[in-house]
Length: 317
Image (cartoon, rainbow, N blue to C red; front, side, top):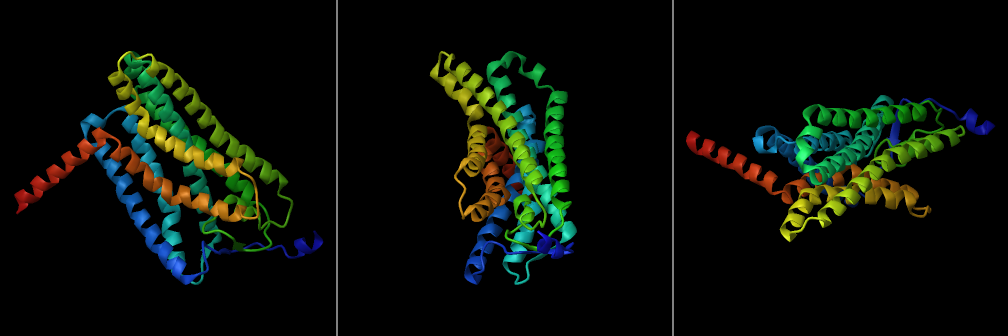
């Protein structure tokens, strides 16, 4: 312990080991992640634009979808540009302040997304189980309050976790990760991190289990209500309004549960990298695809917008 304390230092920048040391693998990852980043930017921006422009999409369900797309857009931009730059760079460094901001923003946006998925599940529960009172319950103030609450909860949790992480003195500035991530930074600490580990576990439990509990409650009631619908067409229509959200919920919560409930091993650090990569670029890329390709109203709004653009270009010619 004394030797560790003698090696203690306050760093001005961190070195990131990244995903691979092989140049060919890094080039391949650069092309792959760049393609994903383009889809993240274009897909989520397009969904926000469509919901903003099309009056048929001015409903609570699409309001929450637009907030989710904004969170995904910001999430992708918090990590992907730096990751792309580092994949083609020999010296993968990040200033201390940039590392703090990256960790804080990624935690905040990730936490906000889980809470938003819970709020979206509640919205679907009201739509299916209380259709006659839907507009009364899910009024504009309620939607804004839920969205704001999700963002405040995500950012509050992030601020707490960031403060207790970077208050620790560090013995090294080499992070075995492609980005600044809580557990990766904690491994650099020279002092006992038992308190931090407990707080990180508690934080993760609350951010994951509270929204997950709301999702499970909502869908248990939704399934019960759908099974009571007499016609098969009515059941399909009711389930269709939930299909896209349920797909995203299973994808996001499934990956998290697999990670945290799976057995720990020597490959845990590499598994952490893969999960972080999933939430940084894969999930923000898939969400707009799932919500657009599986949603007839979003696709109709897209074709309507494309038709307007085509007519405008034809008029200009």
